[in-house]
Image (cartoon, rainbow, N blue to C red; front, side, top):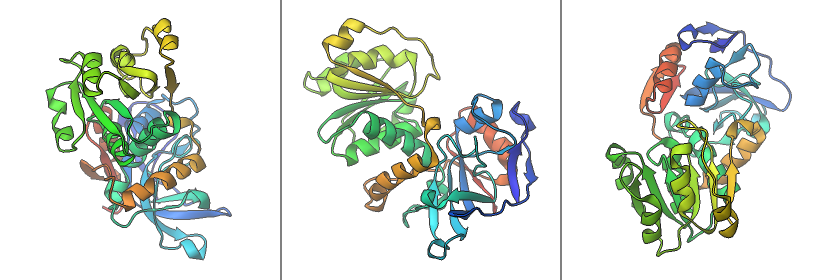
Length: 324
């Protein structure tokens, strides 16, 4: 089969799709024919050597959508979707190939109304958003959340989930160019980090209380304004330091306001943990309350190197199509 396999990490220009012998199917597993596979910044990070848990040689790729082609009879031809957590593309072969082997427990039915290409770029964004908002922050109906990086894939997923859970969402973006994707969502507020006094604006939107939850998808530059925006008992989840790793923390405000700070790394999740998260948010897609991430670019598997280079430079969600 064709697959994006690497023997060593290094520059993205070295990436090549090659012929790889199909592996035998282990017990309690399924073979999935890949219809579409998303390319995430973390995939490029793996290829570049930023993930120490990587074992080689390795087929890359975390997100996928496909159909079960081999396995238990009751699962044959089942449309599935998923994401790899800390396993696919790192410690076991991933989705940037024509086929993928999964444990039966990780074969999650794909909602019929979600196209394969969109399903394939929804995994990392929705696993991250759900893990941050629900699993760690324990977000509840009628609570307020401020989401930084709101125009990105994870941010848009978090805004949708907050609304579906009966809460109120504020999107924080970097500039006016990031406002457009949020305007049609009907969220409670859109703030700009380049212009607004974020803590004051959040207090005004929340009748003086502050936000119950803050999601930090940016890193150090927004840490202080998000921290200062929290209500008593508020929770912040940090899952990126892309724009800066070091931030000051006011310990007095932390304990006086009974605040909580969480760190999230979805690359620590097992396949089964990721599958369990998919099982929790899939009903929201089936009911139509949440829409999948939209693939912005579509490339054949043979153009995987180009896809990785585009994503590393900040391009929109990119999907690889093995059959193209």
